[in-house]
Length: 112
Ligand code: FES
Image 1: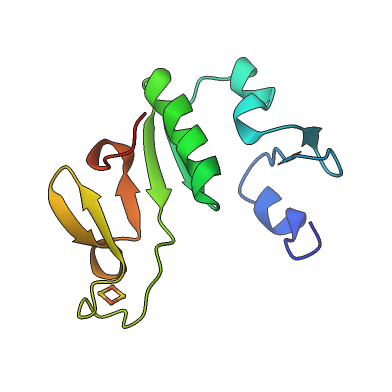
Image 2 (image 1 turned 45 degrees about the vertical axis):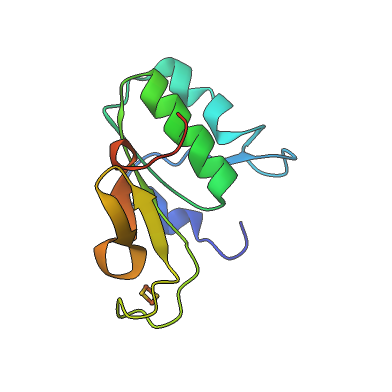
């Protein structure tokens, strides 16, 4: 966590860390962190690699937790003109640059 300042986040609440190799916090995936066994969450927000966000979304869906993901689709113009950032959703195509990047998982066509 060299680029993140743990202290910065701690001013907003408890910080729970998971790393795949165990170099910091608990070893494993974020969806296996022990805090998930100890507390009930009503909302989850996630950003990062899509496979991780998909796992978090699946966890949230399985536990009936509201979840939003911050999509990192490729973007070129950032204005809604080039359409390279389009995400297909239940409501049709969405320009992530203009209508996102944060979307509720219930809008996405991901297999949860
Ligand atoms: S980045 Fe061009 S439409 Fe979104």
